[in-house]
Length: 179
Image (cartoon, rainbow, N blue to C red; front, side):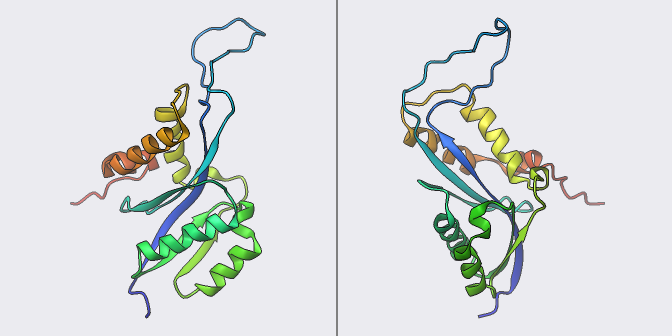
């Protein structure tokens, strides 16, 4: 079956640590480290996100690893989520995006998906990076959670509840102006 429409999604992954990200504000003595009580050993998981900057639709998934296998799972779930679309996926040049497994996956699904790599060191070209920054500032900086599961739940609820107006504001997209 030939897809009827095409869509563009911006894709990226970000780490989620149980230990809070520190963003110190205010004064502290020069040469002395700012100390925050942490939960002990740091746990980590990885948030994969693909979002259509024009509609706000997307797919956000949390994995326990950030490797080619999980990247291909995410792409497969993206294809399942939008079965009637040919999908252009814009992303960075992370190792998982260039691996042999990813190349094989993309070749096997070339009738439905095309990966469009961004130039190296150009996170400003991928709007989902701005979404991650707002998410970190709002939910992860200098905040402690009882468990990594709780933190992930809060993050997913934030992404699900984000209004379209706020979403396009974060991504820096102007609303359509009708005359």
